[in-house]
Length: 369
Image (cartoon, helix red, strand yellow):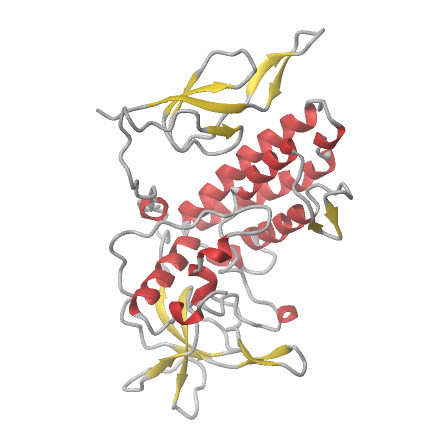
C-alpha cells in the first residue's frame, strides 16, 4: 500500500519534483522521444506483419497498421505545432490528445487472441515475439503523459492529477505485464517560482498555458482573474498543467462509502508558472529530463556483466560486444542507449533475406580507460 503522507504537497522537496515532472511531461524533448520510439516500434511491427511466423500465436494482426500510422502522423503534426509554442496540441481532438486516445485504443486491441485477451484487457503474458513488440510499443509511453490533455465534461471535469503519489510512487509505474521507466531527477531541482498574481476558479477559462496549483482561500468572492494582493493561499492538491482556453477543472471530493464514489468539488487555481517555451521557435537543451541512472558500481575488467541477455527492441543497458544467440552471425558492437537490433537472415528455399528477432548475449562490456 502506498503511503500518501510520503508524497505530501506541502513538502518543499515533493513540490520541486512535481514541478519538474510536469515541465518534463510537457517538454518538446519528451514528445520527440515518444515519436522516435513509436516510429521504431512501427518499423518492427511492419516487419513482423510481413514475416510469416513459425508459430501461429506469433502472428500479429495487420489490421493494427492503419491506427499505428495514424498515431505516428499525429505525433508528427503535434511536434510541428509544439515547436512553435502552440500548446493547443493537448486540447480535445488536437494532435497529442488524439494520439493519446488512439494509442489507448491500440493497447486495448493490440493482440486479441482469446487465450490472452478479454474485453479490451490483456489477461495472460503474450507469446514471446508478440511480447517483444508490445514492449517496444510501451517504450513510447511515459507515465502521466496525458497530464496536459484537456479535461472534458464527460470525465466530470475532474483534474487529471489528483495527488503527487500518482507521479512519484514507483509502484504506479509497474503494471501487471509491463513497466514504465521511472524518471531520473537531477541532483538539484529548481524551486517553483514566485507565483504571478493570477487566480481562477473551477469552471472558468484558463488564461495562460502553464502549471497551476489548486488552493483554498478565505477570499469570499473571485470573479474572473483577480490580483492576489496580500491574500494567502493553502495548497489543496497536486499541481496540474492547464492549457489556455480550456475550463479550469474540479477536484475529486471525499470518497462516499455508501455510494462507492466521490463527487467533484470546486477549487481555486493559482498560476505558478506560465509556459512560454518554444514561442520564439527555439528548442532549448532539454537533456536534463533524460539523465542516465547513477551507476552504483563502476564497470571494471573484473566486474563485467558478461552473459547478460537482451531481446530485439530492448534498450541496450551497456556498451559492448553482443552476439545473436543461435543465429550464426558475427558479434556486433552496440552502444548503451541504442535499441537492440534484429537480424537479416536468408529464408530457406528462396534465399530472400528477412527480418528475424534475436536474443542477444553480452560477450564483453566496453571499458572506459
